[in-house]
Amino acid sequence: MRIDLFSSRQYDVDTFNEANASFGFDLHFHDTRLDPDTAILARGADAVCPFVNDTVDAAVLQQLQTLGVRLVALRSAGFNHVDLAAAARHALPVVRVPAYSPHAIAEHAAGMILALNRRLPRAVARTREGDFSLQGLLGFDLFGRTVGVVGTGMIGRTFARIMAGFGMRVLAFDPGTPDAGLIALGVQYVPLDTLLAESDIVSLHCPLVPATHHLIDADALARMKRGAMLINTGRGGLVESNALIGALKTGQLGHLGLDVYEEEGGLFFEDHSDLPLQDDVLARLLMFPNVIVTAHQAFFTREAMNEIARTTLGNVAAWRDGATRNAVQLPE
Ligand code: NAI
Image (tube, rainbow, N blue to C red; front, side, top):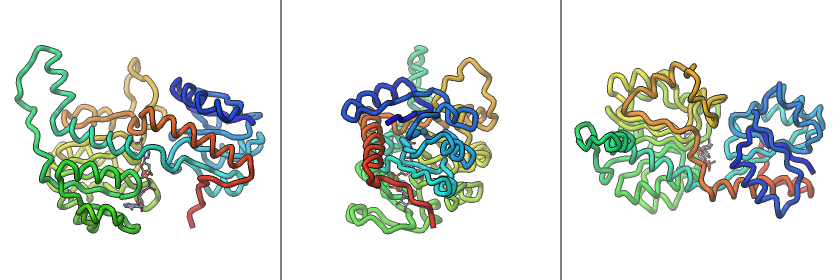
C-alpha cells in the first residue's frame, strides 16, 4: 500500500521511516506542498498525507479521487485546511492525529510567555554584543497574575495546569463542557468578555472553525486589559492580523507571541532568508520589540513527531483493515 506525504522535510522522512518499520507501507515523500499543480504526483498512491499548509480543497480532492487515491490521512490535529464536504462528495475519508503531545504545544506557549515577559531574545542578543545593561528588560512576576485560556481541550487543559503551577489565577472560556479536573484545580470558567477584560495574558487553544475566525479582532483587542499579552499557538485565522498592528502601536496590546499566522502558507516551514519578505503585515509585526514569531513549531518535539508518525500510519493500517480510526466527521 502506497502513501504519499506532501510538504515533507528531512525530519518527516526520518520519523516516518522509523515508525514504518513496524507497518511496511510504501512511503513516497514529496517536499512540495499539495495543491492543484502537484496533486498529480499522487498518481498510484492509495493514501495521501498532507500537512497543515497544504491545499486540500474541492479541486484537489477531485483530482486525488480521479487519480485513484482512496484516503486522506492528515498528519495534524487541525483539519481546517480540508474541504470536508468535498471529501465526502468524493467518497474520500479523512483521518487525522487528534492527540500527539498536548505538552509540546502547551510548553511552547509557556515558553513564549517567558521569552516575551523577560525579553529573552533581546537580552541574549545584548549579552552576545557585550552589552550587559538591563534597561528595557523589565518584566513582571507571573505569580499572582491572571491568565485566560480560550479553549480547554487537550492542549488548553495542559497549558492551564502549567500556568496554575506558576501560581497564576487561571480563567477559562470554552463553549463545551467545563473540565472538572481544571475546576478542581481552581480554574474559573467565565464568559469570553470577562476573560478578555481580566486577563494579563490571553492564550488561544481553540480550533479554527467559522465561529472562531477572527475571534480576536480590533474589537476584542480593545476589550482586553491595556498592555496585556496575547499568545496564539492555535491557528492564524483566530486573530485578525491587521488589527494587531494598531493595538501594538497604541500600547493597548503589550506583548504578542505568534506561532501561527493567517498567511503562513507558503512561508512557514521554509527558508526565505535570502528573499525580501512579501507580507507587509508580518514584516511590520516582526519590527516590534515586544513581538515574537515562531514558524508553527509548537508541535515540534521528538515525542510529538514520533507519535504523529505512529498514529498516522496506524490510521492508514486501520482503514486498510476495514476499521475507522480517528476519522474527521463532517460538521452538522
Ligand atoms: P481539542 O479538540 O482537544 O480542544 C479544542 C477545544 O476548543 C474544545 O474544548 C472546544 O470545545 C473548544 N472550543 C471550540 N470552539 C471554541 C470557541 N469558540 N471558543 C473557545 N473554545 C472553543 O483540540 P486541541 O488538541 O486542544 O487543539 C486545539 C487547537 O490547537 C487545534 O485545533 C489546532 O488548531 C491547534 N494546534 C496547534 C499546533 C501548533 O503546532 N501550533 C499543534 C496542534 C494543534
